[in-house]
Length: 201
Length: 290
Image 1 (cartoon, each protein chain N blue to C red):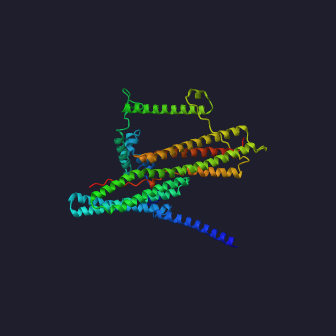
Image 2 (cartoon, each protein chain N blue to C red):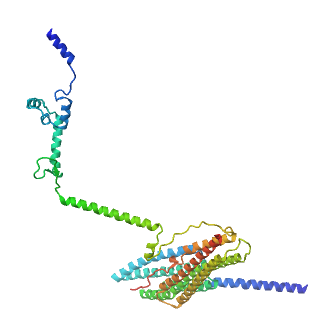
Image 3 (cartoon, chains in turn brown, cyan):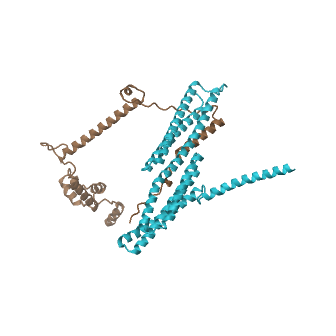
């Protein structure tokens, strides 16, 4: 009777627990981030510490993540500024200390130089815009006077625009102008031939 | 009736004599002339000239070869070969000069704005030169030794020195004729434009005349155009003087010819500027005042 009841209770209380072996959902998350249960539970009592240590089983994913983080720490340790504590301090925030002061100084100088160039270009542009606005004070100082802009005059035909005689004259002028530009007075093909007249034996 | 017959007979005799005089003069002129067309097509004659140059080049190469062989071996055979090659080369050389003179003659025939008298004078001189070179060519076959050929060649060389002036004179005359024709046409157009401006000035109808300011502008441009034409004609006169000097000068005639062309080129530029001013006058006439 009791056996049947225990079996029935087992059947009724059987629940699907996938993260049972690794400490539940939180344990799974901790495993992903690479934090073991033993390191996490520092505030737990020692009585439960052994149980925690016994229960921690790192899976392959956790191991991979831990390896990657170790590798990154090893390689980036050369370039990232090392974290050091100030002298005399045992706790508190870690202070970053630059390895290469000269590199940082150069970067700062280049940045200021770039700012100066920007400022100069902006001021010059502003001055040019002001000059185009119509101020003539600067024009007096320059040696050459600026060329006045050409005024557009639309063509307005006179009463002689369609005069046949005027049109004929225009055509004759165009023809002779074209011929004068194209005609060459040279006759290169008729230059005297080069012959050898120095005969000796 | 008798008087009528007599008059008829006399009239016939007069016509026959006139006809015979005309016919005989044309026959005699043909017999004196060299067997060359008066003014053949320039292209045909120029092609003949190019062919003669090609023949001369071939004969010249053969002459060089035979001459080198003779100078090296000094045998009788090589001497004979050299003589034959030299004779051939000298004849081809004379052909080149003759065909060149004929090409110049044909080109002169087609030249514009060259007076007939000047053409005739130059043609006679060309014919004289052609006649000389034809005679010289026939004479070459009678040479017995190489030295004869050398002396014949030197004769031709001396003759060419005199002929060269004629060559450049003809070329300069042809070039001058082009500029003279341009000047004549420019003068005509200038006169027509000037007359048109005067016509507009004299027109009293409202809207058909221009303001005094506009007429001042037109007069100023016409004045400039006239000055340019005068400058162009001055350059032509200078070129004419240089051409006259070509006849008597010897030496670097190519340099003198280039100088003539440069002077004529300046004249051409002045004419071009004149046409630009006239074009502006016409544009101003066609544009209404504001």
